[in-house]
Length: 377
Image (cartoon, rainbow, N blue to C red; front, top):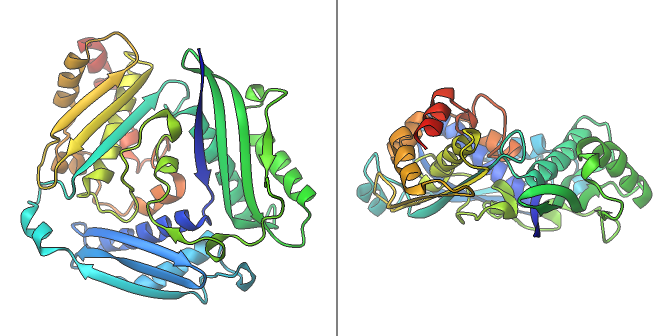
């Protein structure tokens, strides 16, 4: 029976994504100076204004307005005619100390929040990510590169891609639809924009053998897209949880990642859950794997741990084996993934999962673990 799975990805200048990047840029600079920083940073951006708020417990000092403005410039908000730029944007900060109740109630090795986390992996792609996610991410990253490298000079920072893929027997068999929105300069025609997206993006990064004759490829569906970014829509951290995870292929834990230090278990344990799921699939004992964990604030271990796979194996035994191999305590996750490093801005820019990068330790496969899982299951 055929089903569809979809994924969304956004360009760096999408207001919500820009807010995420600013939050993680601030977090990185704090952690670089004080690795034990505890932070929950929220960013709201709108026309001409960046509002940074949240709670901190740290010995570090960083220049938040300067970080926010330099990040806006790095993203591509460099021109006044965008209606929003890093040179003139105002920055308001309302940062408070961490709640004393949380500070006293949460031990150094305890979870900094109560949450559900989800990790997922599938063998349908080389990086064990759902195919729609890979295609959508490739589209927006290519648009960003073409803009920043001045190859397509009329692209502006905002944009989005949604990819829907047809599946049969849980395997992708064709692309159901592709929708791309890309902001552009006012002087360029709709025809030129659509041609640039088709020739420079779709034909280069989308697997052509999966595009059917009747696959709709929709580019800027309502026509011109000149006014975008924070001038058109307010941006807020944490509103792209599905785009940051696995699209519709897996449930989302519901929590956002950006601006949170690794004691915020909804971020760090999501990375560990992905690592576990990826090892299970890469070991060959399952084609797909979903890992779910529930943590309670102050506790060091999850109160619930469950693995779901699509093959007929003993999941209770698999659960026990995985808990012996992987340290899923709060402190253990931070230590094993070396999360007290300034690596978080990168995750907001490149994506949190499926990235081949030495800093993404949760994406690293360990041969000894793969062999142990396969042998024991």
